[in-house]
Image (cartoon, rainbow, N blue to C red):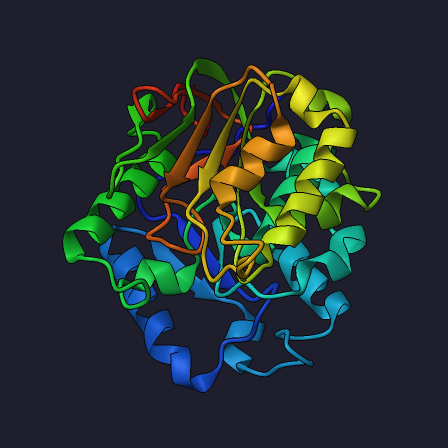
Length: 324
């Protein structure tokens, strides 16, 4: 599958903030306002979608799936909108993967940011169109008021993200906040594929699954949150049986967040132990403890872009610009 690189952001371009997953609750409006100020301070315009402005909800989502799909499709088709950032993740996008206007993406590819639930959009769009999706922070993370990290780290990751979005940054070594972990020595390069493990499995069980060849020579990155270690073990075995670990060139694992571990006398069992137990004697490098996902600020991981991993040197490098 050839990657479809979105068009780079230009000064004065409009960035839309929308709600394809969780709602914008009133008590979180300050995060929205802070992110808008940041984006506009970088020289872009912002537009709040109707669901963001309304602040309502349906169950745990911002609206019913068909309403969320219609809002997202309108932004995908609007030539004035040059990038899209969801406000929040949650558990919503799987409900409208079959309602996305994939032709609009092919006609006018634009950057979509986000992680967690937004992994579902990234992977479905990539499987159907080749779109390079920006696995990166959502609006609260961009606000600088969410992760509790230092201002220096927020600024470092923000500058990297917008450098990639504008094309000012191409080949670059991603900066670690704390030293990463060598889980298996080796070097590899390939296209980044992955995101939230649980949402990846949902997409792979749908008609919008990545084809087997999408894994050929890929650097598979994944993380998860609030999961049982045993569930992760099971899902990795599903990928093993699908042949994923026979195809990939390398693996990059995020920092486990709020995992339910295995209690004594059978535990504790670390995520590293789970991964090595499942992949067995595979010969690809594995780099662990990397700063993306639910332990941000999120290092941007552009799905479909070329990257290299050197697990022994604990280095992850982007090899090309993710934008056109």
